Length: 509
Image (tube, rainbow, N blue to C red):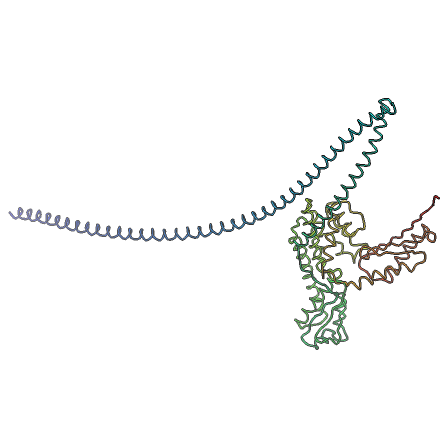
């Protein structure tokens, strides 16, 4: 019985344990399911938050892209408006040219009608002549034809001569009018500032005691400075100022920069002077390159040799009658390009030749010869086209211009130089220089009359043929040129031309 009780107790214990375990499992399963629901809800909430953040980010990016697109559309719209305005201007120009072509066609049509009318008149005249000759002279047909042809040729030659003369006069008037319009339009479309240059520079001093420090003990500082820079330092009674004098503008600029740095630094002795002068030279060389590249950028010219770019930059420090040569060259480039464009020519060639036309002035103090000849040799040396080399060589009339571009460069050069205030030489001094030039030529024996032309760059001398022979004319030209060199100050060179002319006159009574 005890065994049975034990067995029953075990069964009951096992059953109670199974029930307990089952209850525990069910409880844990409920906890797990509750936890799972909480985790799922939390995940849903996080997913919803992430979704909202992603939507916000997407909206912001979309807004930014929309703004960028609107800005791009605005830029495109402005570009289209600019392009449309250019097209309108071109259409206006084309319309003007079409009107000119139409006028020319109408004139040609009228000329053709006139020629046709004259032809009919000639045919009628020919028929009448044939009848008259046959009736009166009783000539053969061949003889009558020959006589008629002689008369017709004579009549036609006269009529054709009149028409040719009328056409030449008309073309001359119209060409002068068109040329004036082109020049006026070019001047109106381009207007630039001009600068007046001097041959001296004034450097301000903080006090007059600085003058003594610049001079140095026994003048060693000023001697070192003048020897290194090649300028003259003028230290006089001018309060708080030192004058730098030199005809070479590059040396003068180097000296000015170096002196200003010495004054700011305060340490003035020969070693420091040499150091700062070398730094000033490097600064000026960099400035030369920058000005040359800027000139090419301003005129839109590409592919220029680097050596020519440096020479262009040197023109920034050169002046002619007070007019800055680089600024003058850019003006000539713009004027020549505008006129070439109006005439339907290659504006790039004209602009390039205009920018380089005075390139010889960068070296005319180092190389013998006129700057036009020097510039042409430089342009040819560094690979410029023949048209450009020729335009440079001919821009002062030393040789006859062989291209339209060369003539445009001459005109653009004259326009730039004649702008009010561009050149500083006064009318009175200019006239005095021409009068002195003519006076020198008239002082020689055998000279009948002399004329200074081309703004004083050439003098024409008429001699008495009975006093001066051909060999004497050559000698006279040499002697006059030597005397001009000795007594007259002038820029560039002066061409001396002696003209000896003989005339024989007879009278039939």
